[in-house]
Length: 104
Image (cartoon, rainbow, N blue to C red; front, side, top):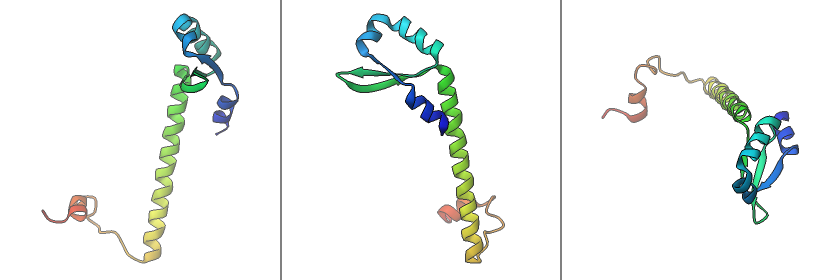
């Protein structure tokens, strides 16, 4: 989370016109500085440009967050099952479609 805060504090803005005129320079600056840039048109933010390294870091962060969310959900489901006193069917893995959709 600290990484995201760092990114938010170091954002530079550029205009769409700057990109049209100097796209090579803009891209080189972003790659070298590893600082994102927000593209503005009519004083409104439109998109962000980040380095490929930052994109990979964001993807990794997102993956870790989703994996953690699934783990947390699994723990909650296990707790609910334990608290209810019920048990999952022993053949759930082999017959999950039958339990989801019934006999068709």
